[in-house]
Image 1 (cartoon, one colour):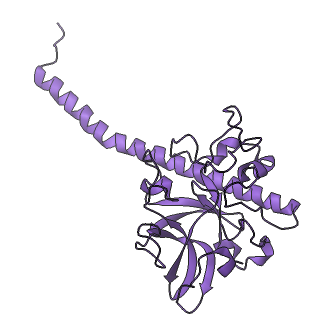
Image 2 (spheres, rainbow, N blue to C red):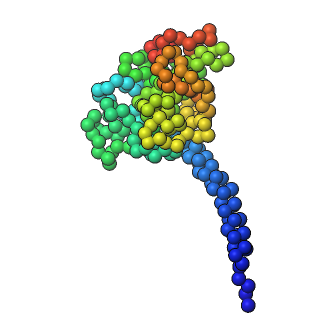
Image 3 (cartoon, rainbow, N blue to C red):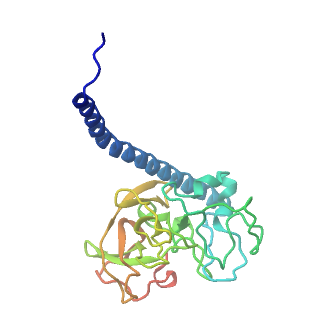
Length: 265
């Protein structure tokens, strides 16, 4: 006659399964997050490559992103679509918000300002470096005008058409960096919960960026504290390797202006 499990044996087995689950589930979650991070990095690489193809067709000049309401222009993502032919790579896989956009501009995929057809609209969670993709009136930037293309961010995470920059002193040199914000309309939504609903995105205290030389790299968040007398919470931190304008000054003092006209390429 086959002996049945005793209650103690059954409890021991359940306890062992619970312990294994407690060990393995975090590992599975980390593996899933690592896969999303790799996917996001690959998307950044594809977009940077597409941008290099774009500027080849436009005499070495980058596209221009409008910054002010009412600008009659299609979304920047639509202008690079012919070079990627994949709308799915425009959205960070680590968050679930349907669409990031400023309601005063064209939607991605729209045929005009009023177009909101869900069969055409798609999600975009990245944007260009303001100093490269000059917005509204700034001089168009060519790749040859950027002295440190390998150190200069091309694209990064943002819910806006263009990014905001923070002047930081690193090793005695003042440079402009892709900044974050703790405000409800913050430009660092995928990292620190600036968007509603709060997202659990970001990758191990950092995020991915595409660079002007066509590469894509991961960067950690560093630094806290406001810069330049701006409202509290606006410049709350930055990514140390994500320089949007390397070496703004070598005097160790941040320039008075933060706009592209003051310290653009």
